[in-house]
Length: 391
Image (cartoon, rainbow, N blue to C red; front, side, top):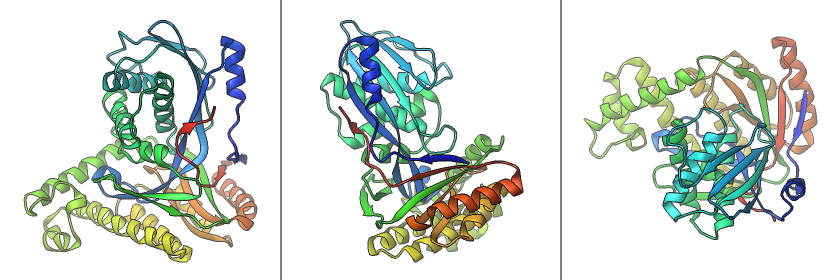
């Protein structure tokens, strides 16, 4: 069992390591990963989500140089990369540097010529766990280049730029949730986001409640293909309703009354996908209200209903995720448990009373290993602040 408790305060060691290599004092920025409490597969349908930034982050130490070259060294990936800001690559290479190149080439166009720089980065957002290490890297790069250049973009535009870089340059069709909460996260708060209007609200998570993320350590090979398939199914259903409901452009625009009136003629699979999206949007709004009122028991019931809908209607859960949810619910002090992320493996999110975290950690790890033969990784965090300058 891996002990991965998010540090309460970020380390400034990266700053010192940069100074040892380059002999100058850099700017130091960070951007966090995220976990989604509820609202799954609703973001790309322009619906509602309720994520929180977590205490795992990408840090970048950066200082300007006299030319228009950008040299980036990652302590996570090894070999440094170097770019000519006047001749940025037009296509992705297929590695971590694509997230850097995609953001920088777009930012250079949007805000004007950026200075050359040396950058050293390190991230502790778990890789491949569905906790948005890519968005954390993108937002950290954008924040670092803005700090260095003295140029400014408001938070919404930063999130949109980073999403666009991932969509257009990296080639991943992500929604805006990950980048948005990496920018706008707030300590001890979740963020209710309307993915259509980008209106958002910070909602307090009660003191004494921890975010416990349980990694199944599996990622089934069908995950990427099935994710794209679900997106395509939602888009097909949206076109169906657009022909029948005025001003309905996405599934966000379809009401329950519309679904009941016209949904019966949809193929069964598409009807199930729609039922999940519509019901999940409703659950997010109820969950936001429950956080506002401090009703954690209601939030837990909504998380349970969300998992059932993802399992049965959207069909993106798997045996390992279902097992992890069952094991968590057997423990005291667990308000809610559900799969989080795209599905077919990855993590569950659990809202747990702080006094019961260690018991949950031990029992779930033992029970999961006994059934699957795999030792899970367990990440413990409070909701964290969004991107910002550290030094």
